[in-house]
Image 1 (cartoon, rainbow, N blue to C red):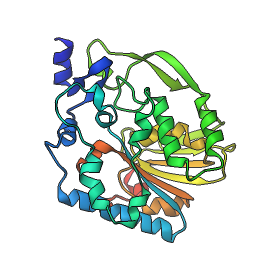
Image 2: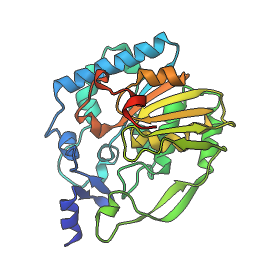
Image 3: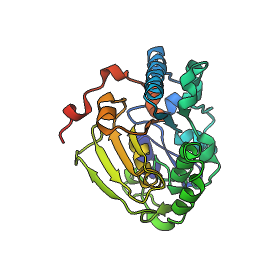
Length: 291
């Protein structure tokens, strides 16, 4: 089987300069970013209702809140796709207009320009960001939350950047002859940390507890997110003494009560905006998953 045939069979698009893109998969990624498909109105309404409720709760309880949309690779690197189709941000096309006029809109972060500003922000062979992209997302998220510490913290993190000659991302591994690349990665930790998890296999319900005694603040952050936010577990402990990460698409009030965080972050990959579920459908995080 040729490389192109393998790519087509695995829902992968081979773009310019060796960049691989997820075009298919369960979400039919390209179809949502070319406008061939659109989320249902019920999904956009659920998103607005959920973000508004989360933001109100955090404001009422004196917590800082951010809802992070991690820009899709095909949007941040549109020039690398080499297709005639017009690609448009799913968030900007379908969700930003619904949030217009809402007080909660200021809680949303969609930092696509932070990725475009760094040529090596996104991996050639992976759906996720490379280390420079993780740093760009971290700075975009925390710059106004830690104005006195952000420069020092980011300098500490950039000092970890190291070139690795053989990185094989999740898209590159879809080929029988895996496609690799040279990539910048972060080697080591900027500050000493200890990390523990509930050991859950799979995705939903996975939980990480990170302790960082030498962090630049004594604050605790609670994160509800997916694998993109999990990438930030190497950067957040520079700024937060305690990081609690819960792999979930929902906002779990029972976890807020248990953790008592100073700040709360929610986030998801942009492609998951294809269908949003209401927080009222969430399971109890501590009861639904084994600990």
